[in-house]
Amino acid sequence: MKVLVIGGGGREHALVWAIARSPRVQEVVCAPGNGGIAALARCVPVNQKDLDDLVRVAAAEQPDLTIVGPEVPLSLGLVDELTRRGMRVFGPTQRAAMLETSKVFAKEFMQRHHLPTAGYAICQSAQELPGALAHFHAPIVVKADGLAAGKGVVICESKQKAEKVAKQMLTGELLGEAQHRVILEEFLAGEEISWLVLADGTHVLPLVAAQDHKRIGEGDTGLNTGGMGAYSTDTLLAPEMRDWLVHHIAQPAIDGMAAEGTPFLGVLYCGLMMTARGPMLLEFNTRFGDPETEAILPRLQDGALLEAMEAAVDGRLDQVGLLWRSEPAVTVIAASRGYPGSVQTGHEITGLDLAAQETGVTIFHAGTALSDDKVVTSGGRVLAVTAVAETLQSACDHAYTALGKIHFDGMYYRRDIAHRALKKGKEKE
Image 1 (spheres, rainbow, N blue to C red):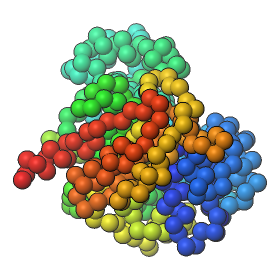
Image 2 (image 1 turned 90 degrees about the vertical axis):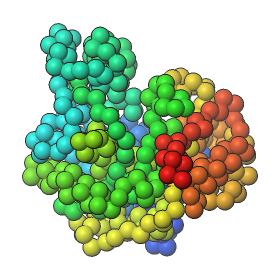
Image 3 (image 1 turned 90 degrees about the horizontal axis):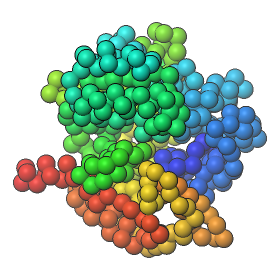
Image 4 (image 1 turned 120 degrees about the horizontal axis):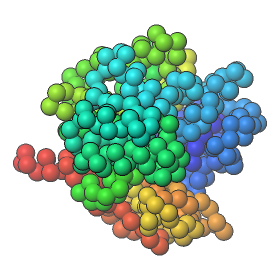
């Protein structure tokens, strides 16, 4: 069969890598793809922010299955358009994707369906902020309503800072685009977990959990990013907790969307905070996380992802299961100097072949391109170096050994991915 993957980041490289391993797949096409994806799939140019161009590519390729990776094509209604043309698509409709594209919609949905989440207030103007802030204790979380590439959440240590940040979001000063609404939210303390499930509108099928590292600096300091690394282990979620999450969060969310006339098909990403009060929902995303996908999929049995996606599209997700490797996986992001701010691109990347020879390592490309037969940087997050090994420490060691063989001008990466889990492990010894 022929599969079309929309997107060009590390997440899409991992998706293409997993799908291409299925013996049923004859060809993978990726639009637009990147310098690494080109080794596994035929890459075709597309403007991911242009619905007509996205539809044009799908219509020209006529794939047996289309998989939409990023959030922007989902927000534009790509799934709706392709479905109307009789094409098989894995991903939520534009309305269902509002669980991610509007944080206000998501919070109100959580409240309507009694899903555990932090207390919040919605403000549409600067004038509303002081009255709303009076109901909160610092620290306070301020969230932009719309998509912000992982940068629309700010934790503020004081009410004064929260008011300032909220105003900057409303005016567009902070994110470059004015938000019509912002959310003030109770700060939750605990361990943050990324937990994803596949959904077919009725049933859910959970994936293994991961933990993302959002801050640019080691020790979880500095600016928020799209993610500087992740790890996935069986110890993140006990089987009993996973079952609780299925019955109290994932399944009620899918049931709630169906009851509201907006069935959800695709990946539901549940951002969780494991608090002293129990698991609490921080957010929903409506696609695979990045870089969590690069840590999760290497633990999955070959070919299983495609089978599960097809089952979701066909509404028979309850008839399939997933087999996972018990070994942990670690993903470390190599970024360009200046990220998450402005970066210079076009720098040659060397050492990739040598790094890929490291035991258990797979290198996913996030922001790369091909230029004169050379791989060069083309974005802020450049590479996602993933290692799978018998222990978490060993996986980290292999990932960092591989990174030590890679070079490009301005290369930066955190050296403490999985530090919390490793510290817990040492404390138990």
